[in-house]
Image (cartoon, rainbow, N blue to C red; front, top):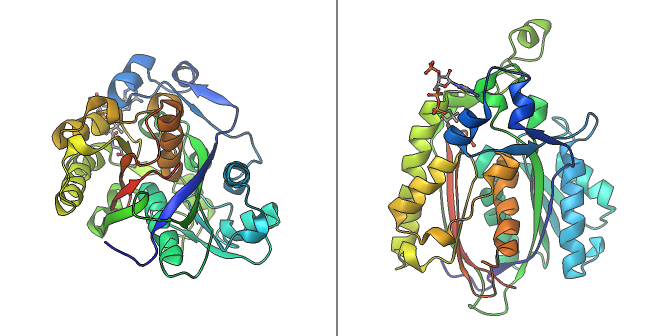
Length: 332
Ligand code: UT7
């Protein structure tokens, strides 16, 4: 897709809360084992917040790092987009809370809800403001405090999720050598009942009954989501590669949503990716929903796999169902 002005990621900041919840800790809380969790998911530990810490707090920490990295003041931020499924509250939006905590004047922003695909959706949404010339700098944040909506007596979900945040700064690319190249997004609402939080919204407003029925927690049909994700992530990436005349082996860094190690490796094999190009950090963070992709970008940088001009493919499948894939060339 060609735009008069191409957007690029010019900085990245990530943050996870210090408290670590290991598989051994979970063994003491529910009937599970470190071996089961490692084998079925690839997760060893995840970070979770202390009581009173909210999504906006993690988002602000990540945003500050990204801004400092690029030397951009809060006064220069054109818009703040927060991808999250765990806003601090229904309203005001987490974007407003982040704006206030950052002290960012002259900006606007909003939250974007697309569960695990929310970061890639927000990235493309933010890019449109750069493409159109409306803004010079857009802050795109993926942040979730999944521990706030997890039932820690349900072994099927509590072993999977963690808390975290990642923020990227979008700016105009100087030329075609770097920046966002193309994207392919889809939603399929028929999968809504496979992964959802039924309580607290307009359909089932919070009552003592909804709380007693644990409707304010994540409910997941793990196998149904797994089957859809393992097929769809590869399919959408294949289509994106094909229409850009690329092959899996051309990708320098594949940065997928981290929901399950088996989904990631199966996708990598089907796409013919070089194993070393597949970024996996689910062992350390679990599934942090909107934060997995920026956290995995950070891992890719630490592993020396992102350099100026590196060809990167982002991919996600999540609740909704939501599906997304993005091609870009790393810019710094
Ligand atoms: O990010 C959003 C998108 N989400 C995903 O992509 C998640 C996709 N799904 C998955 O990753 C996997 O389905 C899970 C990790 C959630 C579950 O793994 P699975 O291999 O599909 O397990 P299962 O649900 O088929 O359960 C197999 C067995 C069951 O026992 P029985 O019925 O065979 O006796 C479960 O009760 O494992 C049992 N089980 C557990 N055992 C120990 C389920 N959770 C646990 C647990 N510890 N934590």
